Image 1 (cartoon, helix red, strand yellow):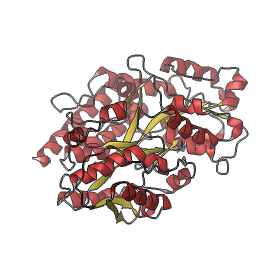
Image 2 (tube, one colour; image 1 turned 45 degrees about the vertical axis):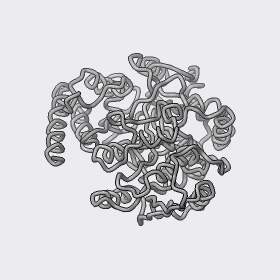
Image 3 (cartoon, one colour; image 1 turned 60 degrees about the horizontal axis):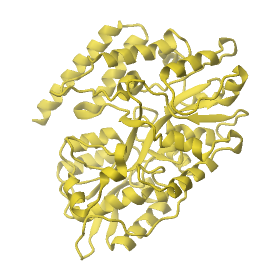
Image 4 (cartoon, one colour; image 1 turned 90 degrees about the horizontal axis):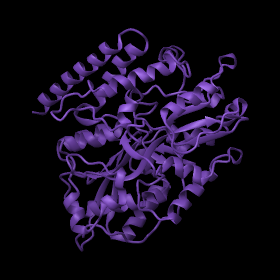
Length: 464
């Protein structure tokens, strides 16, 4: 989704149709622009069912970037939580924005630290801290308190070895944005609802017009597009013994399929053209691309007519699925608890309250919840639809279809695990060698498998 290897690895929480960071997380200039389109649901002061805390109020600490610490919404959120719980939450502010916050958290956690609540802004960070033993397992705390997180979060709940370390505050998925003018000129019906990649490709073929410089499709240059089909099928990047699973045929099929879109079918720029011409991530807005497959965070672009003036209309629909796995891909982000917190029950109360309420403050957009009422979702998506130009005719129902996708499951958009960041780099380097014609497909896949296994062994040695 917001895809972590994109233009900003820290852009990870959905807000108003785009990915931005939570109030205690990271932010960038693009995030600040996107935040202006956030929903403005009024804060709730109603109590929620959370772990029983001590009668005496306590003070908790929560990591925050300096940018988010200065937002008025942050102050309001903390004031409202104090009214509900009686507990005070102080921000442990880290100067700067982006991933710098995690450099500070890494150092703190290596010596236990004294900050209770940790923002987990993407699956790689979540997996890193969970697998390193830095986070407190939450299963028993919430079971004792009667918090049914399975019912509340459903497909948005991430577990590691059946342990829950985070309650999600927001979810980011993928979508297809499309240029209605190109569809109209080609007399092709707009895509809507569930469709397959075969249908996507056939549609792109009809829309591609080299004489006008129009491509039917465009994909971002992210490593996770190299294994998109495998991801939608829920195939892990690791075998049961912890070694790389990149020799599974689905990974080879996925890479070949991606290459064919540009090299063989020519419905989108080839990988070589994308890199050599430095085609930007927002090229869809130049009006020469019929469809753009990308994270829903990209909705900030069609909303921003000042930066992207246009005389054509934008549409949005849910991503195509692989028939072998009817799943969208995406991420969830939220908060976890320092394993060495001196106030675990109170911290769990705050984490649960954030998961229930943070989206109301414009800090995490669409909540990662499956139990919201129709009134809740109608309000969220009516406000979101109102942010788009009226000419686009994007309705709240269109957005529900894209963001909630009740007909689809959710699979992680990234391979995480023990070598999450390095795995992505290896896939990008070796996969690119195939896409630009430097290596045969089989050699590239073998190289990914071999290098990943070496990295896994190294990580295991360092851990021991």
